[in-house]
Length: 78
Image 1 (cartoon, one colour):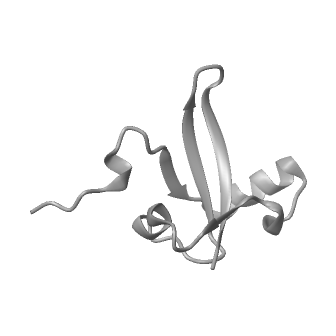
Image 2 (tube, helix red, strand yellow):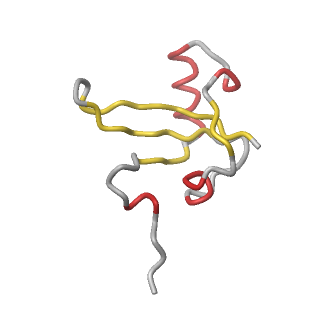
Image 3 (cartoon, one colour):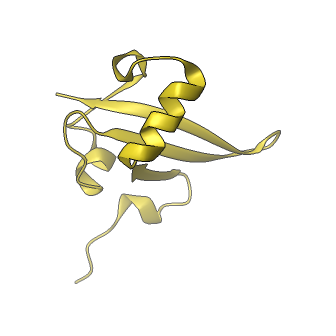
């Protein structure tokens, strides 16, 4: 029996753990610290599925009618 993946659902945007070098680029671009990013709890089902840990930053890629693709970043907290 195949386990259902939340990421396979059409309404769930792509979630991935951000690499350290890409994170630094994002923080420099927005001139912010990592702690100033919006938060997402480690208990969130998507966070658990991608196996993100507390302190990781998750990059969320959503489809947008106006921009085509919109990027969002969330800091994983306890």
